[in-house]
Amino acid sequence: MSSVVERVRGLVEMTRPTNSIAAGVLTFVGAFVAGGVGGNAVATAAAVGATVFATAAGMAINDYFDRDIDAVNRPERPIPRGAVSARATLAWSGALFAGAVGSALVLPPLAIAIAVVNLLALVAYTKLFKGLPGVGNLVVAYLGGSTFLFGGAAVGSPLAPAVLFVLAALSTASREVIKDVEDVAGDREEGLNTLPIAVGERRALHVAAGALVVAVAASPVPYLTETFGVAYLLVVVPADVGMLYAAYESYGDAGVGQAHLKYAQFLAVVAFLAGRLVEPGTVPV
Image 1 (cartoon, rainbow, N blue to C red):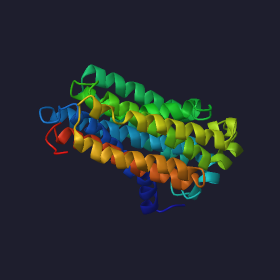
Image 2 (tube, rainbow, N blue to C red):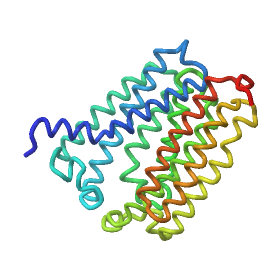
Image 3 (cartoon, rainbow, N blue to C red):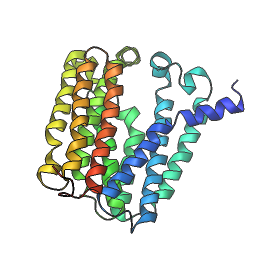
Image 4 (tube, rainbow, N blue to C red):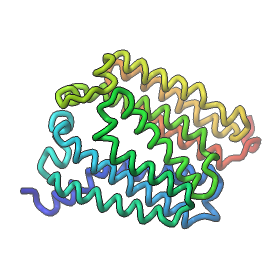
């Protein structure tokens, strides 16, 4: 039986605090790019809180449903190692989902609608979508990109971060496919039919690389349309190089490739922040 300290540590750990907080940051970026943080502090804070709670809840419910798979792929996670019971995980996830709902209720109707769709997708992901070739990857890609739309909707400008949504969704889909390649052994044992299992690992990596190439090709659009200036371009180019190199690395080691891709994705987010902070024409070429 685990101690109270081990149990609390396990409950916190299964929320993937880094990922949950990062999702909240992305929502903030969406609101910031939409230009509405200053006059909408309460709405922005509520949207960020809802995102953090919802992401943490999704991580926990995923651990609950994936406990048998994790016994093979991730035996160090809280449920397989005995730190937290499956029943406690389910209750913890429910409490986190309640926090997400409570935070979202003060937001505009469109933001609430996005939150409802995302919460339903989070709950349905593991049981309905994860084992379908490519479908689970697309659901996670939507959820990752929608954090920006949610932030924009919270301050009344849902379309302002639309390009961010597309680029984030493409890169997230790529990373999810690469992660599936990394997890093939456990997924196959559990009977899941992920994309690498359905079409082969190398073909799946081709799909992941293709999505990244499209994202990189589209990344100059905010500069070309004069939405952002040179500051954006100076940061997004290294991010693009990092993404392409991560795709190349994945053919040799999927674990390393997906980890490095995550860093490149965060650098791309910094590019949008730089683009919003520095108006076009204010940085000398």
